[in-house]
Image 1 (spheres, rainbow, N blue to C red):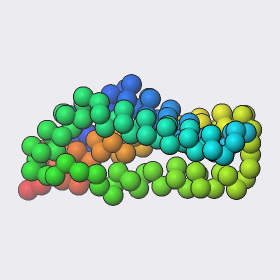
Image 2: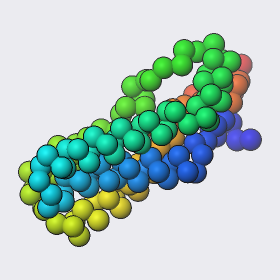
Image 3: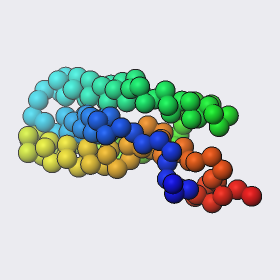
Image 4: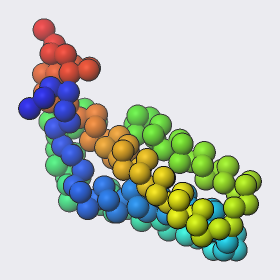
Length: 141
């Protein structure tokens, strides 16, 4: 195993569903729906993505691995920082008043693709390194 590779990877269905829901959440702001409906879709999509991710059985393995290292199992700033571009898009998109299903589809693909790339950071598995490896995969001596 590569010393810089994460010990645990998010399961493919979790990563796929979570990324798709986060993409949908961002894209909801570009749809031609009423604002109230947009917000409901946004909340349900983000809530669904987080609930599915953090209630999935693989989280027990993640928790055990973190606690095995003597660390606290908790959300960290490193998990929240990758969400900032998605949050920024959520705040900026209404100002453009795109109100287009085509724009929403493009935004879903872009935001979902970004979420797919950073998903191991969001769920925290990227930060779990093999025991004995330091930062950047350099072994401690």
